[in-house]
Image (cartoon, rainbow, N blue to C red; front, side, top):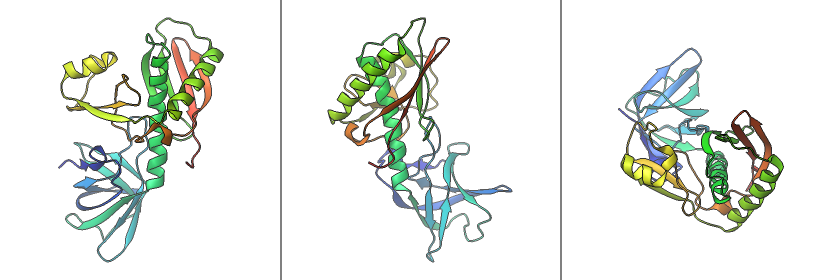
Length: 248
């Protein structure tokens, strides 16, 4: 039985009731599988949510992260054996809202860097990979044979990001139901494999679209100032590092 991911419906759901469907135990950890969860499972360059369960008698159990297990099942990782948790029981699951908000800001900032480069006219660079983990944030692109002045790029990109964040624009989420729809919105994603349709699309600015299953801010102003750290070119790959303040 797949776990229903409530963050895809409403990312502002942080607490809800759920039913335990399965428990997977190893020597060091126990993974609790639920029928539904508000937690984000680690993937797409974003850390999984952490939080806690509250059982019927008031007992609280912490889970340190949320991960994909298999066949659409989502595991909430707990330490040690949990004799009080059995398949079929109901509980309340709550994520750490402040950590989720920070991760959402980091992920949205990464998408905004992609959008800002597009607005600056760097259309020929293709997206390669990204990491939105605290302290490791970067977005990488294939330069496709072009050269780049890193210091000029830093100045132009920093200025464009500040303008976009100060514009207080909305971050829009839509869907592409077919490969043809995806191609019309995201030409650079044509031919890539997506296990399920529809594919979720994020648009941090008007006219820019990228498939993404992560969590995001509702407005660009929630991101706060983006500090570009290391801009590096290795071979044909450009890597742009960034960071945000934790409190916003």
